[in-house]
Amino acid sequence: MSIFREALQTEAEGNIRSDLLKEMQIQGYNFSSFSKKAGINRGILSAVFNGSPPKPISIRLLDRMGKVFGYPEGWLYEEYVEECFHEGKTHWRRLRAFLLRCIELNRLELVDKVLFQVMEETMRLQDVFMLGEELFAEGKQKESIPFYRCVVENEIKQHSERMAISQYKWFRARLGLDLEKNREAAQQFYPFRNRLPEHFQLDGLLQLANVYFILQKWEDVQHIADELRAVTLICFHQENGHSRNRMRVQIPFATERHLVVYYGQSLLLKGNALEKQGYYKQAFTYISDYEDLSWFDSLDETGWREVEKFKMYAEANRANLHLLMGNFEFLPDYVALLDKHPSELLSGLLTILEAANQYHYNIDHVLFHFRKTIHLLQTDSLDHSFYSNSFTVDRQANFFHKLALYSLNHTRIEEGIGYLLKALNSSIKANNQNLSIACAAWFEQFRQQAAFRQKEIYESIMKGVIEDEQMDHVAFNRCHCQLG
Image 1 (tube, rainbow, N blue to C red):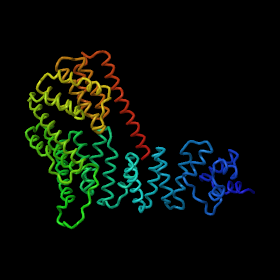
Image 2: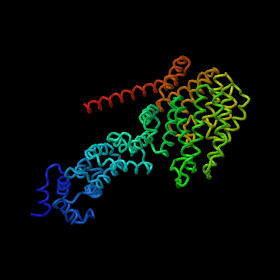
Image 3: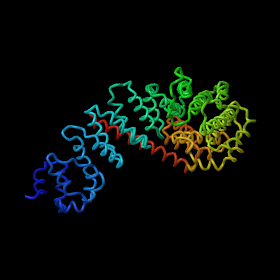
Image 4: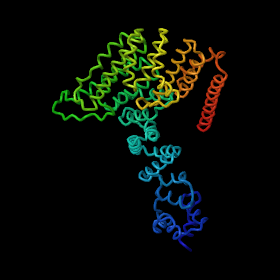
């Protein structure tokens, strides 16, 4: 009896080796011919199928065999899971390679399945954490989510640094266009923000404040901004040798941004949150605090660039406040500033429109001046590299909403309804439910004056909302049934 036939007879049904051997038989291969075709050493094949115990199958070997057989990538991956837990033990090196390959092929359901099984050995939690860290460092934030989630769900020591870091990285990885999902991510991370190492605290607090800012949670923004400033000052004193132990060698903090950014942003966010609540005089007091940050120690070339940015922010926000207080004599200088700093244009136009709507001031000349930018916004072709995607989409929605109200206030009804529809579409995209409702309410008020094509667009948008809601309902029920 040949070694190949003997292997076929001894393999159990359902085992990955029996599936591979049967496929070799179906396609007319023996070990010798398959070895030549696949470029795999015959001795390795024999050890895999006839060894006692059998040689483990690497994921590379499985992929190579599947390619020779003509199957798509990922063939027999469900069966391969057993290979990673041979004799009830986790073979981490083999498992790690398999998990990375599943991520590469977007087989995330297998990642979850494997991680669930891994947690039967809690000692592997550190391995899972480190693999998540590796993916995150490579810029694969979405791919790192299952690993951080696994740590969060299985960490026994709830106050451990590993738990806090996993919560933070999971929070960062989840942020996207959907404001409601961002809110949920922020809410989950919030209790862990102060358990992080200080360099992570800075980045975590800044991201948290930005999420709350987009969500218009102004009191939360103020609170987080105060925390950010306090932590920044602690790090500043430590980094510059102002601690009690002056003999200790100081190690620079490994933060994403220069330390001056966190200090300036804490003041900027606090002032802007006060501005959004109508506390204009109080907001003015914060501008001078970040207008000149040249006193900051250890400013390198990057640091000085950031100092110059805050100087520009101070000039822009001072003009913002004057406009919001009805002082339109500052408008020409503000337009000139926006021409000079196009990255602030969307934010600036929002303020100009808000002030114009509040005081019924005509800004047609300003809108004409920035007509090219407004056109790019309508075609979604504006360079948004300065802001995060969620921040930009939401600002676009607010911009079109304010522009719609301005047009309607000046009896340009068809034009205003057109901007309302753009605002509605962008707000739905960002899952900004409050703004979506407001846009729909305004459209209904002017429905009788809308053009036929505009009514069609509105009905199409609403139909899409209903279909998405029904799909979510079906997905929820399917998930519920599976859990049940």
